[in-house]
Amino acid sequence: MGLYVIKMPDIGEGIAEVELVSWYVAVGDTVGEDQNLADVMTDKAMVEIPSPVVGKVIALGGKPGEVIPVGGELIRLEVEGQGNVSAQESPSSAPAAVPDIAPDMAKSDASVVAEKIVQHAEPAPVAAPRPSAPAPTACVARKTTLAARQTGEAPLASPAVRKRAWDLGVELRFVPGSGPAGRVLHEDLSAYLEGAQANATGGADHRYAQRHEEEEIPLIGLRRKIAQKMQEAKRRIPHFTYVEEIDVTDLEALRAQLNRKWGKERGKLTLLPLLARAMVLALREFPQMNARFDDDNDKVLRYGAVHLGIATQGPSGLSVPVLRHAESHDLWATAAEIARLAEAVRSGKAGRDELSGSTITISSLGPLGGVVSTPVINYPEVAIVGVNRIVERPVFREGAVVGRKMMNLSSSFDHRVVDGMDAAEFIQAIRGLLETPALLFLE
Image (cartoon, rainbow, N blue to C red; front, side):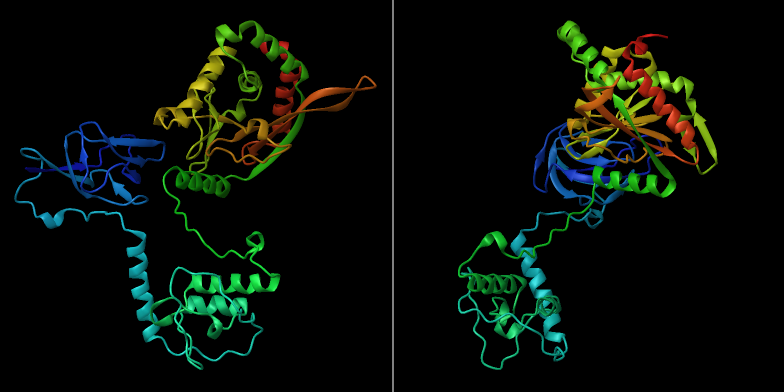
């Protein structure tokens, strides 16, 4: 048998380190060739790391959320024949295995540590009397045995439990403890409060029971990248948002007519391809919107090509796949590419090249779009166009009240690069194209 070490490969684009997002194997598993071992996150996308050999996992090189340098050890396998690691290499150099820890074991270890803290802690100072909940005549049924406390015996509890009891106005001497030596645990305090409430109301009504549980959720993978990018965008870019109302009645009628005639052959059109076309035409007049701001070097890079970012919600969070050269696509080609990119994001198969390089972005929540929004610019771009939902409501037209389909565009701009007047004129240009949809097909 040999030892085979898989190291973090060089993924390219100057990436020096990646974040380990998830493991698909555990110590003791047998893996096949090309089997996916782990997912890692770069600055651009999620990447799968496959196994080049058949072997048995003997050690994992990190936990989800940890950052691993390129060339760092990812996983160790035991393989048939000779591996890729010298027999003289010390086994102690192998990374520590990352076994699954049973919840009860973790709790047991924590209990031991807490018990030591209690044993070495100074006696709690006597606090001034506070209003306390009355001792209930009956406690809620517990699976653990509650230790009885002798009269005058000081209750045993951790500092966190004491503080919580103090904040709630509960005297711990009335609370039966289920921990070692009758120590009062958080769940004992919660059960005591539930029992007191049940007595006060004449019966347990769980609809109004107090809840005190807490859940700690680490930010890893795509969620961490989203948080970092949003923070960077708001830290660096002075946003301002401009909202304009648009009458899309004629646009929706045209879209319905095109779908009836060509939908089966060419696919259904949504609003986004029409908006993308309007943006392409408006950007010819306002090229300063199709740009990126290099604020480290005080340079604005304007682009002739419209690489349109389409903010898309995936299972792990928000991604922005890129419709490249939107200016060269007709309506149906635009619709097909948007659908393809959305499916790639939702299936987790979007590559780095599909998730980078946008020059301006569309943000849309579809039917959930609300009345108005304040979209965050996709740094380092300088503009983002946000689509709100379409609502049919009464409006005045030529002195009469008629029903029209209305929609707001809520768009944000980088005020260092874009003036308010230019932003307003840009959105008004898009509005003119959408309200007179024939103009979308005229050059």
